[in-house]
Image 1 (cartoon, rainbow, N blue to C red):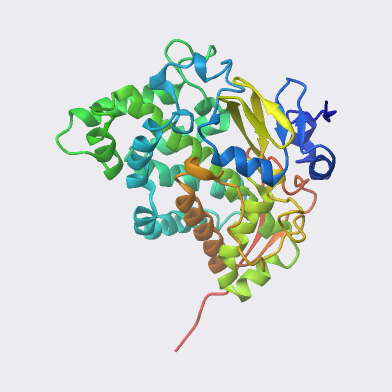
Image 2 (spheres, rainbow, N blue to C red):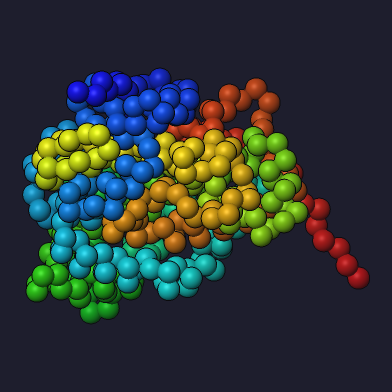
Amino acid sequence: MTERRLFDPDDPAHLQEGVPFDELAELRRESPIARTPAGAWFLSRRQEIDQVLMDVDSFGSDMTPGTGIDGVEHVPPEQLFLPEIDEPRHGEIRRVFNSALGVHRTLKMTPFVRDACERLLDGLEDDAEPDLHARFAMPIPSIVIAHIIGLPEDAVEKLIEWSFTGSVMCRPASPEYAPDGPPIHGYLTRWVADQRARSERSSHTAEVFLEAEVEGRPLSDVEIAHQLQTMVLGGVHTTRGLLAHCVQRLIVMPGMFEQLDRDRSLVKNFVEECLRQGSPAHRVTRRCLRESTVGDAEMKPGDWLSVSLASANRDEAHYADGEAFRLDRPDPRDHVAFGGGPHICPGASLARLEATSAVESLLDRFSALEPVEGHAYPPLPAYLSYQPIPARLFSRAPKTGF
């Protein structure tokens, strides 16, 4: 029997010290399929991770860890988030998501996203050392998702709060919030009911979800509310992690702001490298659905898998100089930051648009961003979702002409 290394992906030290990439590199070399203290399989190598992400019939998503639920088998079907839903139902609901978040819709959002970035920057002009996380990276995805869903303006602050507290991850099946569910559940369920009663919907998203038929019947209000919550989970909770990584790199990486300012064509590569090397969603959870072989491991139905996207994105067998942050990679989008396979994140194009717009807005507005002296910035990449990212801002001189 192969001896497995033990690795604890939930070690609290990671929150302060950052992702232990040196240890993940050792795992890839010595024990690419390790064990966690809880008994899950821990996957660190791109080869095995690609297999698991692609094979949705053998490995299903399970987003219950940390919410007090012992697995999706204890979640009522109407409370499942999109990644947890099995085929063919998943594919039918995903087509509704694509109608709201597909590339064709994302392109139309470009002016709105850019305007949102500019308005947030307007509010920073008189602050010498603003927190670019709380006042820029955090609000952008909430503003955008609220607009896409068609929620009222006061929803933006609510989405920020629910993302910050983590309650957006929960549902009525979560013991902490049973039986009524977390605040977002009640809010979205009431909003869907209101939209259904209207003769005219407030958004394209509301229209497509209310008019959709899945497996031959319309979606209920609760089913729609949970899919919109899925949209918030990915579109707010995870995307702000990407924006925080982008912003902090502009502040603390010597010469990066200047390099992008000289050559704006590198901005998209910069965003992709933040996704690859930073991996805002460091890992995802899968459940084994049938007897399967992954590498040298025999897995059984019910087994838990902790899948390290962050490690896969630095795998030396897949990337030249994978630990380095480089803007000259031959295929910048060759990463699994958005997952992979049939269940890849449906909002990937929107997240890319928000990150690109945020970076370009900062480059247009300022001549430099510099660290605030004495502030202890967390290591990069790290768990940045809840930490201040202050910066000294240097506005560009106003243009003059005759």
